[in-house]
Image 1 (tube, one colour):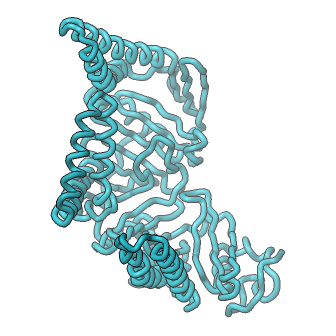
Image 2 (cartoon, rainbow, N blue to C red; image 1 turned 180 degrees about the vertical axis):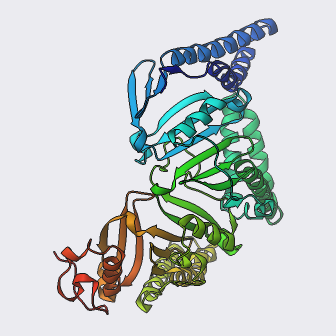
Length: 517
């Protein structure tokens, strides 16, 4: 195929450009220190210039050493990589183990025509199963992607599964980060400015803001909260546009390809034969706004330590009906197996869970309220009478309706169904998750009963798989129904462990046989 090849030499320029940000911070701190030592202006400028040159030169020198010690080659049966400046490594990935190819280019790399190639093998990212080429030129990266996925030329397009509509950006602020993001950024800026010698300025600003809020709380607090939400919403809009601009999800022969990003571009190609299902995720705020996201349940998509985004996400936040359509198309559920993804529209609908499951959630809400009320009563007794003690009752008073509402939402979310190809399960109040799991990808079952579940005749059934989170649960299902569901989902897997009337998945009701000891 190919002999040993080097990474792109443009990486030197990339390293130099990236080092400028660190050099700027270091120069600012050095300048402030030298001015405090009464250095002459010329000496300060010379010292800062020398420090900047040393930092950039050091980054380029390290990159040069990395480029000289890194080489890769593609043979008839494997992709090999030699790397390491101080510790040498030689890694190889068999071509038949390649599950996904991820191409990424941030704005700096794009400026120099570079792309990072990540080759996934379907194992956990934390185990170091990814092979990373950082970086190749754009043309070589695309050619390598096609070769690894055995695709000689671009496939003819039949139309994308999904493509960005800018009207979807209305879902961007429906996240908890809208209300906390501005405060997080402000805290990071406070620490950053203090680190470069501007601590006096940040302390004065913080003291002035605190004094203003204390002097006029009824005016200041609403204004601060409104400003925080407005800044958070603006940040959410900008992040949505940057992350999902030019989004396109399409099906190529035997694989899915996702492309997105305005500044940092990303192209992910995933083999469909390694797709073990699909998930519709509905966080609370997004669900209240009628939105959802679609995620892949697949091998080779585990998040590595340096990842900050959800690598399994196949769509941005979008309307719930559109998410159901995309999920059904990805799961190829034309036979009706994924009808539960579309709220039971046609084909199989989700089965409800016993009333005892709802009672468990109501009891939890009442227990939490009682505990908070006891804590409030203790605080009332301990606090001096001169303090505004009435506020201690706010927590239990608010917890009761909130807890009952969450209990109702959690009960309403419970459901499961068994289709021709998929096991569909739904759960969650704060984040509702509907998962269609390929029955062929289920490798085992775990059954769990707490003391209170046993008294209520309930059971939690976990389907084990090598993809996604590793297991997916059907919560608080009737004991007999749960055993029957597992036996029917993967015939022959559970029967050797059953006793009594449940052998072979026969029988009904909740009082039947039990798993063998």
